[in-house]
Figure 1 (cartoon, rainbow over the protein chains, first blue to last red):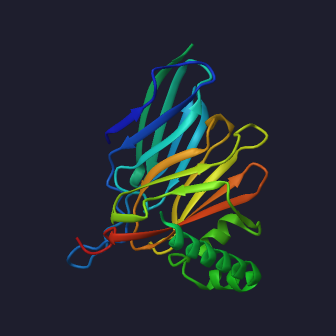
Figure 2 (cartoon, rainbow over the protein chains, first blue to last red):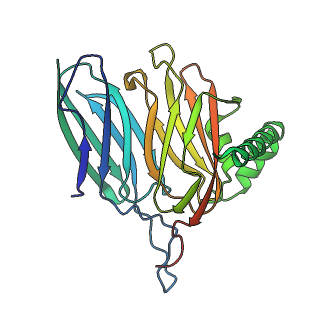
Length: 106
Length: 159
């Protein structure tokens, strides 16, 4: 299981724009590198990141090999209601990881 | 700060886009002939945008003008948009000119984002022009390009 770090404020006022940051450990092997023997190293990257807020999708990113190792992503959302924000990463070779954070909105 | 380089890159990009628009059938035939692994940045932009025209402005692509290590380069895109259900950013696409593939990342967002600002970290294989294209809810496209000098390229060599 890949290690993921997420940063979501624990509390927010309704209507506030909150900043969300997500970082996950992954090599993001591009598929363009070769070993010293000239054998191509197969691509192994995360291709998709989806963020949902109480089940509704609020943000999505499609990654390509040009994303640096340990993909970091920062975006924002409007705090609408208390609940959970979930993060899902999926990619090559059946890679899948999920993380979630609770937020209470006053 | 990065005045002359960006202006030059902007002009070059403008000229190239108009050339693509003018020679549309030629590009389409070239794309079917070319191998899918070798797609130029302009071709990739053409595929994403379709026949729509790309306007300058509203988008701000933030990249350091001088990059020491191309393996991790902080990239941010800010779009001037009210982010209301009626007028918001639908997607932000980032393209690179000289990486092995032109596609870098696509962000899909909506009015619930509140603010059209996204950031990530990318790889850059060479000194080049990076382009951000933003797709609005009304179907219009806006772009910004930045010229970057990379001293240590992202590793595409052997281990």
